[in-house]
Image (tube, rainbow, N blue to C red; front, side):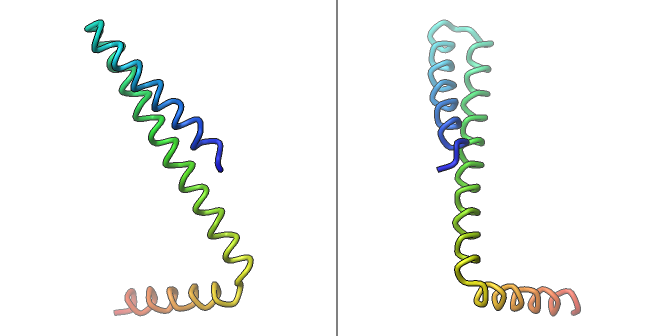
Length: 85
């Protein structure tokens, strides 16, 4: 598991709590800071998920080089045909 997933989840939870405290205290600056941390944490978590998926895809390509090359060739052919027309 990518470290960004853990850090992002923690920052998202911290931002959610910070926004809630800002709501209770009626402090717009704390609310904004909490919402920012929540959004940044969510983005960091999504980045970690994408990194995990890319690592899994890389493992598949390493284990299956010929099917991966065939898929890449087929995609290249389709893109070339689309761009040529």
